[in-house]
Length: 524
Image (cartoon, rainbow, N blue to C red; front, side, top):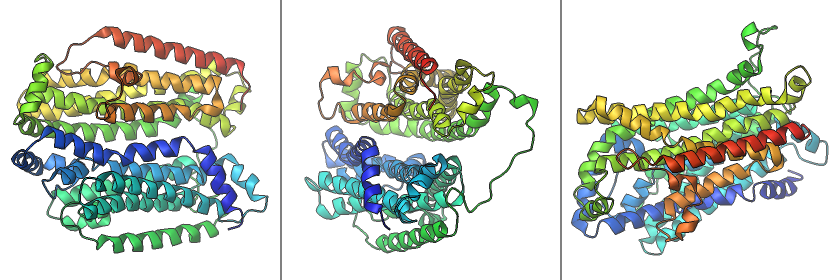
């Protein structure tokens, strides 16, 4: 383990902005949801009625997990039930970033030529990620324990922390299996998806045992604020010990830069269909685009199927009706519910847009771009293939998510022909804000390539402003920094095209600036 401390300091320096942002953002979600629900429902009877309507809707159980109690803190933790999934993904990707990505780029071998232990890199990545997961749990506990039962706050904090730790070791195992960072991410994210589906199937069917196969469900089985049950802690302990041991054993059985699974070699010669920069970009981007599209189509259908039940539940609250009256009556409860969730879809799809735009930087740092540019391929021609997916890919993902919402909600209300185009249009209205973040990523790639992670920081900041800015009573000028604050509330609200055109122009300027910088700077 020689050199582990130095590598820990290096990781903390490299991720000094990204890790604190996602830790803070995810950790405050339970208390913000609890406070929001406590503010909307003043009496126990209203909370009980709301909880009963949510519990009777299978779509909500599938999305967030089982609702165990009707009190505000239990409802708040339940409403933030998707946050542990995001936390698990963040921990998983962080470990892979500082293990397999380091090997693929050649930095691991360079560092390994110094006085560094073989497992120092893996240990440092796990230590830093574990610190982040522990801090997330501590913040969850501290924010909830201030005004709610300590035992429930402790169960909630432990649940978040242990889910993060579980997927950190999953990422450590995935990093040993394949020689490519993309393959490791695919294995890790597939494991996360299977865990979520197992939790969903176990909570919505008679096969409740399936949920015991999912670390996500183990955190919920601690039952925060609902007669806490501490027995799942033993399951977590066994899983962490076995998976962590497996990661170190597998690491010891492979060469640096190699994976345990043999690489899938392609044919000796490429077909003519790949003889262009755009064809290569299609080859690189088609997998993520397909995965995002399928995932958001499913989420869209879940949201659409839940919209009618949520409308019935929210309609019983006088404050919600008054809020709609202040909006001028231009949107009914169903439109308001769908518009709020579609706005979250827009933020999430921005992550795909940034990922697709920054694929150019990945290709550059892995020295795969330079051999191509040494041929007759121009820089702008090479970049255009990646930009097509950074700009048009989000449109595809948003369109299928809107179609999923429209199909499910239109089927539930008996108005499929009317709802489908409205929800697809509402989803596509998010595109200018998504393009703004994609343009920022391109601008950073071209002008400040070493600072490309700032695009992720911007996305995290916009998500933070959108989710808790109003609850924290932040100044309006600060809230308007986010491009998502200027989007129309569709479906149902007035469709003002001026901010959409302005954001599209900003995105175009940022993209042009990035391409200009890319043409003039050195490769690498």
